Image (tube, rainbow, N blue to C red; front, side):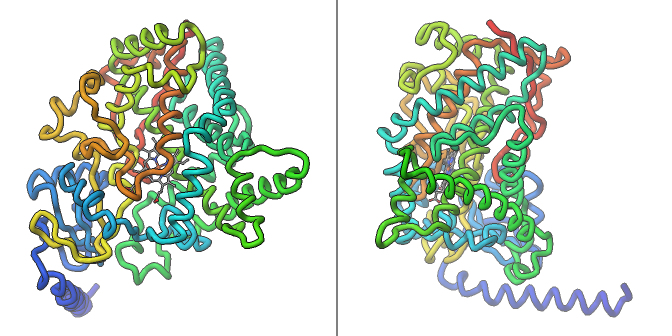
Length: 495
Ligand code: HEM
């Protein structure tokens, strides 16, 4: 690049910078933005995010406080890192902050216009939430489908048993992902999707992974909307291919169900959705149904399995705690290989392990980002209209202002306090809070406890290759969910 081109480029950057600043001054005039690091021209604070934005932003909050303003490309971003301000955003001003800015990847097949995850909190979204609550996640509905889930847990237990007999390791995250997909497909439409040994199930897992990868990969087009149409990283194109594959699978299942409905009734979510679709004035279109199923799988599979993987990792690093869980299970259920869902309330130590895992390893460290629909004053600062709001639950879970010895895995801390993750205690909100709280919470809660109990009750676990406990890595990989970077593998020993 010669000097003249360089100079022209530099001048253009400065000009664009001045233009952005001028446009931004609209906000600044009507209030003082929260503190934050000074942005570079054009890219803003993009470099501050690094590969693990939840950690970088937790560090920044130590310098600038629990409410930070960043400029990422063209986007105003406000980061919340304290329970008090999270309560303001998710409870006091819930209505203003309940929208989302769908990422470019979600535009594939117009998903952003049909999806419960990305729709604004208006009529269609309300309808989808109501249907899910009534038809799938209510206590009677979940109790009624327990038999189907019990079968899938027996499959997990048999698989671990086989590994034990053959002296093979279990990849805990993968086994939990297959089981999560099976638990959900059983609950949603009485079909088993994934199998521990078959290639056909690999295809389904690959597609689910592919979508999660596309939505989780940082996309430059999300920060510079003008690039949306060029899709410079090809993420939108790849996601369309995955969506096509998933929709083809769902179409097959729907067609099959429509054929068999005359002769057999399954009475699951799919039947309920098809009833709404076949009314004289349909409440849901076939597309609505497919996009809803997609949402449930993508939002539910990996969140649940990564929680199980982190819990097992923490327990393997703390052998006395895994023994405590096992002893509690033995006391309550004896030597059965599977616990009943109704047993969970009688297992306070297991519940404490799950809470402690959510505190240290929330699957969605920023929740699903919210958006402000208006200018709002919070804590004396202006949160500008259309800003993206990141509630850093990872940071408040590890903040010594909220927790004693925050970096230690100490389930015992939850035995004497009533703190729960249902959206009322803002220091522990791995499922969010307010109107956008995770609708799958009641199912997720059951799935995580059940999978952990199945893995612990009848098996002891040994690490591969004589790895010492303190050598188990805890490195995180940031994506759609917060994964363990190096998957946990361990040898099961049947007790
Ligand atoms: C939304 C966490 C399991 C379906 C969310 C949100 C979080 C979350 C943090 C965003 C809340 C917000 O925006 O404030 C989790 C965790 C799970 C889990 C930690 C497991 C450990 C599930 C399951 C399902 C599910 C099993 C369904 C089968 C959804 C859906 C949304 C959502 C559809 C979007 C709701 C909306 O935008 O209105 N989840 N989730 N999740 N979750 Fe979950």
